[in-house]
Image 1 (tube, helix red, strand yellow):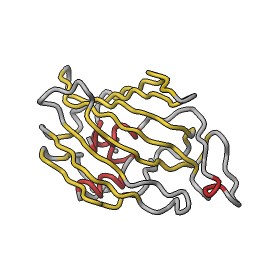
Image 2 (tube, rainbow, N blue to C red):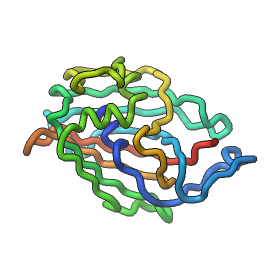
Image 3 (cartoon, rainbow, N blue to C red):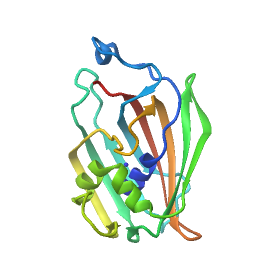
Image 4 (tube, rainbow, N blue to C red):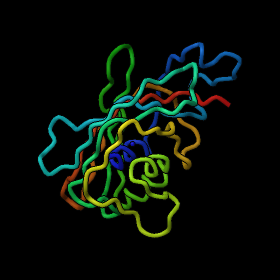
Length: 200
């Protein structure tokens, strides 16, 4: 996770629903059934269907998650384009759908962030900032991702795990993340993820 937009989708948002975990993932481990320490499996990220020409754009896919090797990094393929600089002037909003009974429960959760979206994404997805933008997420100073095209071609990425969010409910989610400056919307991205137990 805009792959800073992508990060937006991750930063404050995870909720409720059960995930059926492969037996290979849980053998010999004490795995809580509802919520706890987690990692996020990335499935896809793409533009919202109603995006406008001046919006940021993202088109990403990720390698298959292997439950027999849960800590093996996924590989990212695709690109993210910022039409304007991504910085702390931007606000963010995330709407989450939950997968349940073979269908999406729409608009199950809605989270808003009024400002400092870039810094919060950098704090909550440091792995992504390092991999996608070649930036040190612990660097001092204001958060800034310059406008331009960012490409990932098989880049290995850690499973997302927000340092400031140690516990999440497990489940299968579809996120709609938007951001902008003041009353001008600048990006809209969809992503699909699974939140699964982290082996300890």
